Every structure is written in structure tokens, then in C-alpha cells.
Amino acid sequence: MFSKKESIALLISVLVLTFVFGFDDGSEVFVFSNWLINFIGIFLLATFAVLFRELIVKWFASRHDSRSEYETWNIHQVWFDKRLKRGIPFGIFLSLVLAFVSLGKFFFTAVGVHKFKENKNARVGRKFQNLSYYEEAQIASMSILSSLFLAVIGLLLGNLFSLNVGTFVGINFYIALFNMLPFSDLDGSKVFFGSLLTYIFLLVFIVIAFLLIKTSVVLGLLVALIIASLVMGIYYWKWS
Image 1 (cartoon, rainbow, N blue to C red):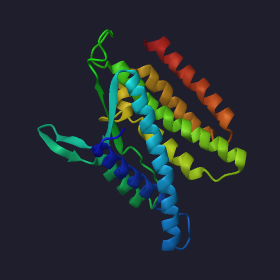
Image 2 (cartoon, helix red, strand yellow):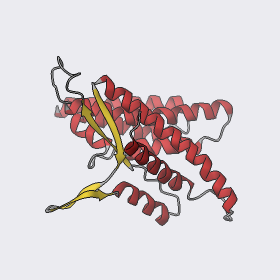
Image 3 (spheres, rainbow, N blue to C red):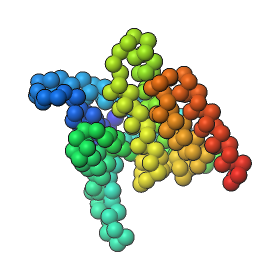
Image 4 (spheres, helix red, strand yellow):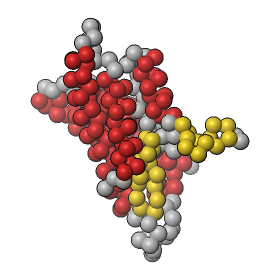
């Protein structure tokens, strides 16, 4: 399912996310044993969140006769005339720096990207032999929606069984939110350039849901859906 290279990238990403969300364990006095127990718990939650997301993306990519490969978000172009072969792990660097500077209060989660590669033999008979930008946007949007789905499920289960699911919900919400950034090879960039209407809808939906969903899951999702649909409709009517 995952290549060796992907597995290493996934493990690094999970460890980074675990450190970011586990940097501050909420204790007034630092006790290493308590911090370590909290770290292990967050590691399990982050592992589940990341693997679920990747399996959904791989499955949806296969529906388009292509495959998705996960890798850490590296910046290769540092200046107009200079390109680094190995790249700089910008997502990981930024995530760790912001965690340190904010003392664990700020969670930057855009640490990995997806590379899509079509299976040209399997795509014989399709309109386009190569993946179109719109298809890439569809696949990338599933990574956003899968994280949002886990956040909503976490909230519902937390409310139903009175569980403390704040960390799990936060991990998935922040993964969805920051991967919507339309930069470099992030999923948000693929959605933005492949389907601007989809990008507008997802961005507005995630932001509104993020602000309202902790108060009421159903009402928050409903309001977010209505506002996102209205904004997308207004954009389509006015500029498209």
C-alpha cells in the first residue's frame, strides 16, 4: 500500500504533528512521565488521522486510474535562479518553529503533499490520457474532506459519550484548514488551480464550521453549508 519512501515521510509527518500538538500538555508543572504519556496518546491519534486521510486519497486517486504518493512538503526553488535538488522541508521547519515560538499554542499542520501520477494504460478511452487539473482538484479535495469528516465524527462521539476529543478534533481540523493554503504543492493549490469554485466552497465551509461547530455540530455544519453555497453561488453568478 505504501512504499518505503512514503512510509518514512508519513512517520516523520506523524512525529512532527505529535510534537506540535503535544508540546504543551496543559500541565502547570512539567512532569516528563505525564508529558510522555500525553505524547504517546497524541501519536496514536495523529497516526490514525494521517493514515485514514492517505488511504482515502489513494482510493479516490485509483478511481481516476492514477495513484497518489505522499511526501513531506519541500521547497525546491529558493530563488529565481537557484533550485535545490533535495529541497528544504519547509512545512516541517515552519511547523516546529511556530510550535516553539508560540510555546505549543499554534498548530501549523501543512507538512506533507500529494504527488499524483496517472496510469496511462488504464486511462485508455477516457477523454484525457493525463490527469486534468480538475481531476487533481477532485482528488486533493478528498484529503481535505476526509480530515473534516474525522473531526466531525470525533465531535459527535465526544458529545454522545462525553469524551474529551479536543485534541483529535483539533488535529483533523487544522490538517484540513492549513492544507487549504494555495501554495506550492499543497492540496489547496491543486484545488485552487483545478477548480476555483470548489476551492471557494471548501474554504468558506471549513472556516465557518471551524468557528461554529464546537457550539453545535449539526447547526454549525448547516450554517457552514448554507454560507459556503451562497458565497460560491454569488461568485459564479457575478464573475463566471
